[in-house]
Image (cartoon, rainbow, N blue to C red; front, side):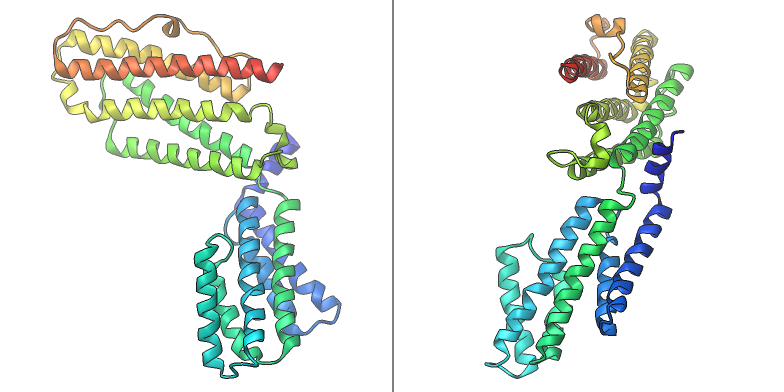
Length: 345
């Protein structure tokens, strides 16, 4: 394992997150204390720096929270200060500022963190005409959130690409284990609801992680993720391979109880195709794991599906699933080859 891989593992681990949270807390509290600021400034700045990292290991999540929570404090406090000379009653100020903010949130739903707004609205009544306290609050929140975001961005930024490979490897391994069990036992007994649910959960987590990678990678590619630039285009195909295999196994799992009632010749037909599908999935999974220059070829991809001689409607459903899966594999390999050619140009 290389030093870069060790850093990648640390960046997405719980331990790495603890390090960043502690650093954000110390910077948020230490900097204003160093310059002799009032204690409530240091406390607010430290808690804001901590909160910027509190929603999960994602730069895009921290960035969004940084902006929304800052706006939730920078907007209602000035509104309250403007209204206070006209309406000096604290309860009236809270109601008026809340109404104004509800209107703004409805108009700009992505600009504010509604759960952070309540504290700022209530503080308006406490500040009264104390402009210095209001300015201190706005400064501490904005700068504290910025500290937390910068820690996330610069100190062990989460390697979403490495995490994607981890989850994709897990999903591919689960697929391989189920296909291997089917081929070895020549039965669908291994396709229990628990196994299929676990496989589906792994598939969904991999899909969500790909979304996280795309969000953090950004339109130009963030510095710590640029090493995935050439292979990022293949992430979709790796996920599609897991999706297609999961879909096929779920269809087979749904027919597990009826499958044993079918004629032996048709069951042999299905198992023969599943054995070849297993080989193709293994080869493609190995290709993605080792980042080879060209995806492997397999005769199964070059031989059109030949239906079994059967008039049983249920047999036709299973054959349709096998035929569609073969088409998906063929299209996936063709798309991968085209993507590889484009990357090499």
